[in-house]
Length: 507
Image (cartoon, rainbow, N blue to C red; front, top):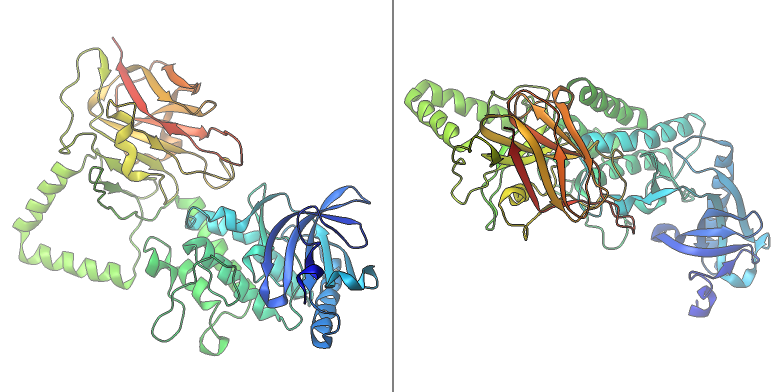
């Protein structure tokens, strides 16, 4: 087919007998030779989602496949669910589409406000809790459709969008002519895999998206093999949904939903978080990871447990030496316990030494500072010490969020720990991120749950220095700067940079 046939499929082009003006391309599904567009309905003056099936009308097989897709989409228009965009209309050549447009069919659905799924994972995988919350509405929609005898075609990531209130939604309906309910189940598992790993695990994925790795037997590598902090059950259900049902694959979306509900319930009840592996950066100090995750009884954990038992039985002295090393290398008021956040600590000194005793009044230097996060992915964890290094030319910066808090997480913070309990008069933050909202909180322990910390000051940061006067409080060894709203410079960007923090002791 000549390039002139598709000349209209560019932003600003008009198709559908002049009714729909193309605004922006959202993606393409090569399996159906379909392009996915946001368009403007000139008659009803509203934005719509177009699934445009391209091809040569003279190709009988291609035309028949397109007709089948359009018919299936029309049948699904009677199904309504928050997890699926409602089909408004369908068009075929001669009924709303000119035969010379090079279009074999078109599905028109209501436009889903929010962001593309691919944009959501552009900066890396999501925490397990965030992934389950996002995916549950789409899973519920698929389960409801299957009970109604319908197939949705939710098996391509560019057909999915994230709503403004944090739900995954099938934004571009139009199942392939040969798609079955099992394909929806595979699609749900593949989307879960994508959220957890940033990789696509089914054939025909978008260009530029990394493909899920496979083992020697050709099966997809489990997400927790790539990211060990992921829950075993969630990792397992993602892989099993992709496998053939004859070898233990999951048959229904209900089975996936059950695991999603279980993970969400466990997170809500216990707020347990997965450990974040410590690492070493050439330009930064060594990180120490604090987590309150309950140990998982997987093979790796059991192996480590047996090794630990053997060491205890054979060399008690070694254990004492190990504990001594921990005391020197770690700074913790309490042993790790269940039900708290992950805190990744940096030592703000070149040799990891604790700060000298503070003066009776005036600025006081924390012994340690680290990223405090109630998910399992703290932002820029190895850069936290830059916020208290006395150099305004260095900085700690949050990740860039396409959706503002609390869509994916309620906030992010920096937890400072002092060599001895202090009472602070003020905290001064140097930052270019005007509009950032922060709370100053005191905590009884490094890994205190957020709800057990106490707010002693609030402020909106200005461009430059912002001095935050603090309320009366008891002396504490742990002070949290908790960011509840990021700066929004525009362009869908939500990010905050902190260049320096000065803690001032009260008289």
